[in-house]
Length: 256
Ligand code: IPE
Ligand code: IPE
Ligand code: MG
Image (cartoon, rainbow, N blue to C red; front, top):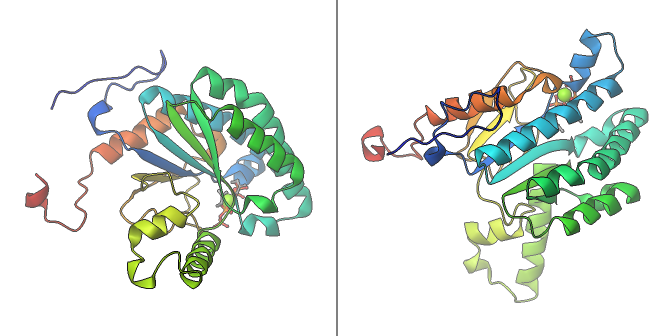
C-alpha cells in the first residue's frame, strides 16, 4: 500500500499518519476541564471556556487530516445533575460557541449534527443549534456531531420505544428486527460505527457514551486534560490507532 501524508498545519507533524488507513469515525470524551481550572486556581467555568479552544483545534485538524466523522461528547444526561450555575455556564458557552464557530464550520466545509435528547436543552441552545445545523447541511468534508444531553442508555430506551411502536402498528414485524433496524433508530442513524474512541483526563471509563456504537472501537486514553489537548495529541492518537491490529473476532492470520 502506498503511504501518503497530509500536512494540516506548519508546526503539526502528520508525517506518520497513513491517509489510506484513517479512522472513518473518531469519538472523543472531552474530559478534565474542571481539573485543569482547579490546578490553576481558576473557576471551573474558565476550564470549560478553555476547552472550547481545544474543540476548535480538534475540529480543524480532523477535517484537514481527512476524518469524515468526528463526534464530541459535550454534555451527558448525567451532567444535568451538576450545580445549576455550572449547567447554566455550559449552556451559555454552547450558544456563544455555536454563534462564533459557524464561520469555522463554513470555512472548512463541515456539517454540524447533534445527538441526544435535544428537547431537554434550553430553548436558546436548541434554536441556535438547529440554525447552525440547517446552515451547514450541504457541507460535505466532515460531519461534526455534538453529543448534547446525550446518554447511551437513554438513546437505547428511545430506540426500543420507537421500534416497539412500529411493531404495534404493524410497520415492522418483530421477526425482522435486526442490527440494521436498531442502527436506523439510534440518534447516530447516519453515522458509521466508531473506529477510534479517545478519552482525555486519565479516566478510563465510557460514562454512558455510544455503548452500542463502540462495540469494536479502539480505545485510547490519555492523561492530558481537555483544555491542553492539541492537534498533535490528536495525531498521536491516530498514529497509535493505525499501529493496532483490528481483528473483529478473527485470527491475526485471517487479517493479514
Ligand atoms: C468535561 O470536563 C466537560 C463536561 C463534562 C461538560 P469536566 O467538567 O468533567 O472536568 P473534570 O472531570 O471535573 O475535571
Ligand atoms: C463525561 O464526562 C461526559 C462528557 C465529557 C460530556 P464526566 O466528567 O461527566 O464523566 P464522569 O462523571 O467522570 O464519569
Ligand atoms: Mg469530568
